[in-house]
Length: 71
Image (cartoon, rainbow, N blue to C red; front, side):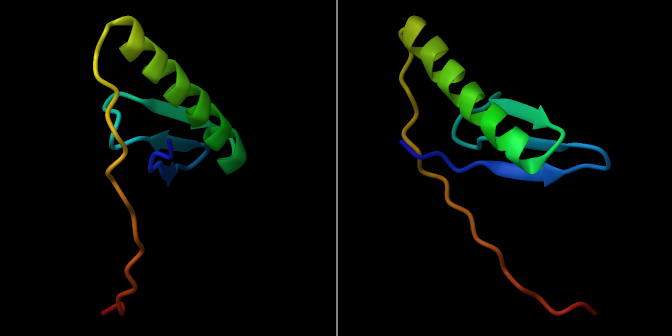
């Protein structure tokens, strides 16, 4: 499965979250590190859902960038 991951750049680190998996978040010092960490977090999150007998949400979120002119 492929989940949409939102990456946010902070002043000294990166954060990431998965809209389709509420509560699934990660942080890292670099973009590459946060991508690796969120992958592990997704796998751990899904494993926890399975152990709890909960449904695994199907990926349905998408993302796009929209360009606008600055006023």
